[in-house]
Structures are given as structure tokens and as C-alpha cells.
Amino acid sequence: MEKNNPKVLFVTEKWCDADPAKGLTNNYHNLFKTFSTVLPDAKFSIIHLDEYSAVKKKHIDGFLPILVDRLEPDVVIFSLLGKSHLNPTESSYEHIKSKGCKTVFMWPDMFEGWGIPQIEEFNDAGFADLHVCWGSERNLSQEYDNLIWLWAPQDETMYYPVEDPEKTINVSFLGSPRYAERQRYLTHLLTSGTEVNIGGGQREEGLPAIKYAELMRNSRINLNFPEGPEGNDQCKGRVWEILATKSLLLERANEATKNFLVPGEHYVEFKDENDLIDKINYYLDNPEERSYIAQNGYNIYKEKYNARVFWNTIMEKLG
Image (tube, rainbow, N blue to C red; front, side):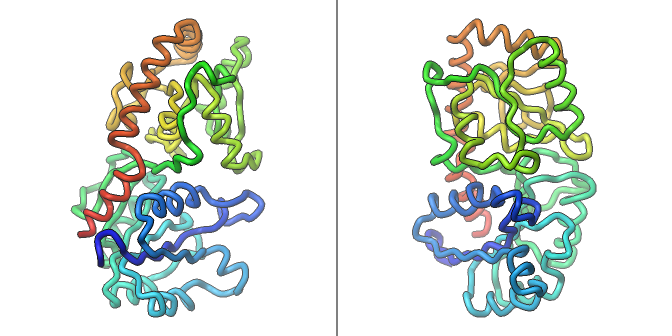
């Protein structure tokens, strides 16, 4: 594999939750766009698990080995569809490894029921050269030499800085409101008379990624709630989206984000509903301090947590 010109095959979904009605998966900007930007000379192809099944009415196992033989990729990157039956099975993984391909598994969300068991299974079977975890839930039963903790890489044609005086929205929360923690805090804000722009997620409102990014860029303060699907705190991809737009990240206090950032320097924490209201009012009334922290957050994003660092780290780890 040439370091700056690898041949890569992405094996992932095309649509959010494999549902065309919900629009394209975020992998289009998190993975495909960032990869092509960072490694413009690399050749890459994509096979979509859900689209292949929908069009061909067949399982991907019948085609993936043939595609690998045809393309001869250096690296195969998987982003699996949860526990879906559409995912490749053991026969495909065995064939890919028999061809000498390096394999990378992306884990955007991890918790006890998903990600952790699969990492252990794939390693026991010898199917994985590298696992890339997009967060900081360091709760595996053991650490592995082939596992690295990174973050959600951002497409900077969508998530780019807008200076504070040009922003037109005071406070926003953009994302799915289905988690109990989010509902509790947002309800408290609205009933207390605090203005907050709430933009539902891709699943609920079908908010296009371009519109989502536009609203985030134009918000002075963007809220984030770290609670994950099983009640575990996660460093959400939204953290990096907000920092990339040079907005102030205001997030419920948690240890996951602290693995990457320093509260009070790169972002602001709140501890409960009343503290959230106090922090919103304080930072709206103090634009210079708000801009100072937002600038610090943007600076560390550009220095340490951008897409170039993400992909270079992966390629270096693969050797």
C-alpha cells in the first residue's frame, strides 16, 4: 500500500437507518468527503449494504467477495448497520482477510449492547486490523492494541467558522429530541421563557444535513447533551460540529468530553437545569467572553481534532 495513494473500499449504509425516507447517511460527509479531501490521490469505492439489498434483493455476502477480487483494495473500511441482518457475515470477512486486505471498523456509537461485543468477537476471529471508536466511552472489558479512540471527522465545506457578530441565532439545540435528558432540559428552557431554537434530527424531521449545518454555524451558543442510548455519557459528534463553526459549546458536565477538551477553556459546562439557564444568560450578556471561549474551542479543533489528523492517524496505524 502506497502511503499517500491507498486503494480503499468503504462498506457502509447509504441511508440513515437504512431508510431512504430519512435521507443519506452522515457517512457521506463524515467519511467519504473528509477522506477525499485529506487523501485526494487515493482511489476509493463504496458499496452500500442497504442499497444492494433493496435493489438486488440479495445479501451482500454474495457480492462483496467478488467486488474485493475485482477492486483489489489495500484497505476495507466498514461502518456497520447496527445488528442488522444486512451486515456482512463471517464468510465475507474471511475472504477479505485471505486477500491480504487491511480491515478497519468504524464505531460512531458504542455501548454495552453494541460495539463492545462486536469488537471482541472480530478480534477473537482475526477479522480486524483496526477499530476506530468515535468517542471516549473507555469501558471495554479490556484494551486492544488495534483499537484507537478518535472523534467524528467533520466536512469543513459544511462546518466552517462564522464570526460571532455575523451569527443571527442566540441559542440552538440541533438533533434528535427523543432522549429523556434532552426532553427534560429543553422543556425546562421553554417553560421558563428561555428562547432556544430547536431543530429536530434527521430521523424525526428529516432536517437535511446542509440546513442543520447552516443553523449551527449561525448560532452563538449551541447546546449539547452527552447522554447516549443506554444512559452512558458520550463525546457526541455534535461537539466537533459546534467547535468547527466557532460557536460556543454549552454542554451538560460529563467525563467523556473532558478526555478531549478542557471545560472553561474550550467549552462551557452546566450541571443542572437552573445552571443551564444561568449560563445561557451570562454568555449572552458577555459576548467577549463567549467569543474568547468559542475561539479557543475552534483553535484546538483545528490543531488536534480535524479530519486530516483523523485520517492520518488511521493510515499511520495501519502502517
